[in-house]
Figure 1 (cartoon, rainbow, N blue to C red):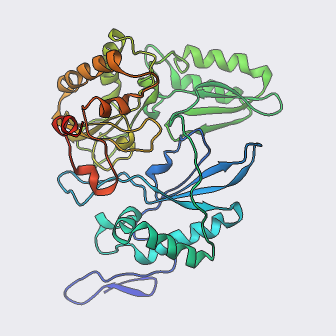
Figure 2 (cartoon, rainbow, N blue to C red; figure 1 turned 120 degrees about the vertical axis):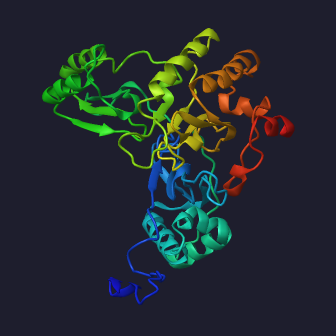
Length: 395
């Protein structure tokens, strides 16, 4: 017999796992984020619980849009698993935010699936029970009535690179770290540069949700020195709009779940795609691209305008059509593509985007309007109407 917190979870000859209803633990992991418009750098719609600040126009916060039910993981070939963007459940006051969070977590604790690990996240609970029922139970447990959602606008999911002003004459420097990996190599000794900055910096370092690095609270007298150390190490280079909005999971050899390369391969793919973009005059355009070595979605590829998900060694599924602000998922465009096929598939789409886009139109929105891919709804709709032909039929 096996016992946990005073409850038997495996016993007898059958070794059947029984449901566990503990007081302090959840069926699976649970992710919580806070976003302040217009920046969606935390990808608030990708997580179980989120708070989006409702700004009062005077530099303060009037309340919080509460989001629930986001998540990125799925399994190839199993349509009952799917990524999902979070729903905006309603608005709460700051004083009630903690009570709402506790209620959301305890409802998932009690309603979540403890028998099927692939069905154990909050997004499936909400898909099965419905948002209205979930909201009612949260309000009941928290003793709080949520107000209707308030409007908000996100302008990007990325970081503000370079310098930004802080308080008391101090400033912050955001450095682009490709795929979150600092390296020493022939063209740029990034690790040595960061070590040199750390030896001279009295402030703090902060890692961003986009795998970049902020050197924070730099006093005026040290700003010039730190700027040039970072510049010479290639951490302030004029990257293309695609590369500075790129992200990859670690994949091989670090992650045992990876089916394909990601962190080590994406820079080479970026070089090939940058050449295509340069030929079309699109180098400066911000386009979000993300890659993972498996479908678990750790780099949030399903919220990227161009998503690549490992299917096997050297092979990837290509997804298109996500919203630039992270509010809409993409959809499967083509399967099992190797490097040359990825480049060949994207080249005509880049060409069409350069020639036919409307003023201010983002790449993901264009791929839908131009009929390359169908728009994705939420939940189970992620697997419906996939591929190029489905997009053109929907048009």
